[in-house]
Length: 395
Image (cartoon, rainbow, N blue to C red; front, side, top):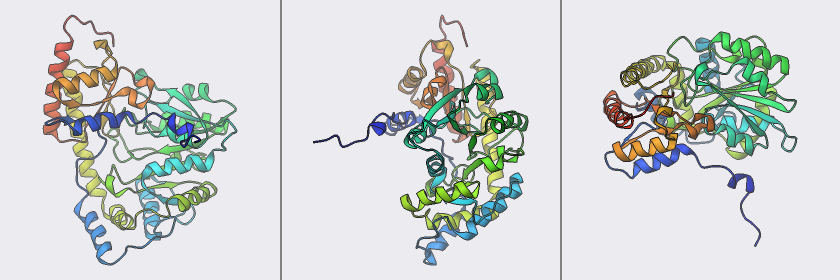
């Protein structure tokens, strides 16, 4: 019998995040700081709109590209919050989460078999590299550096580009590091992007969770909107992870090709979720602001705790993650995370789950209550105190 499975799929590594999530689910009284999911419930007025849509019998397919009202509200939101203008008819596609948008965006842009390259700054979200491979591209990793606060520099980008480079993934605010790109950083890399004539997929799912200043999109930089697919969604900012809804905006020529893949593979995003999302965009700004403030309080609490235990960590200004350095302890990130889980019953994610250059770091999510964070940080302090016996810091 011939081999039933595809070689390129077999070669993909399972998600490094899921390993610890699955272990914690079997442990009694364990605390997890490993999942990037808001601990808030979806605000009631958004849930009510979803419920009302069901009561009204809105249980049928929508247009493949999404509800007209939702696409219009996406455009209104992007214009209101980030001064970005799109045509809702031709330049917006509603997807099943931001993850689907990443997948079909790459598949719509990459020509398999031609050796086209996708640049992926790491550490970053676990799906970028597998999606590039499945699209038929060659992933090229740009290793972001702690000393640069894990921002992408123009020189790093320039050094990575070859004649085969087609697309740059731009993952800011960043999961797992919490790093952001400010306008001057974006202007510097935009110059390289225009000069080298490459394209961008900008994953801005954490755009509303910026704590230093208002988020700036690469699309805001002159000459970049026509060569960028902007991806966003509702999971993080509106606490709607289970509703599975995102969107992609970009040049109509690319969005039209993404729509073909979407309509054959998915048909349309969930109808109930789309009606709820209309309400979120119209009346959810205050909810977002309240959640952002709560995350910011937790962020400051963690940074203060790290300073008190002398655990090095650059200050992140985006998303809801911190990325402390644990190199001083002479263990791999996975060894540290496994021992911490076993000895203190607290789960964090090894930095290597997000790329090899995450070695020596941990991702800690603060999408959890202050009470859980306080207890977990007490346990972390006890753990590193024990490990520090006869150790000299090297980080």
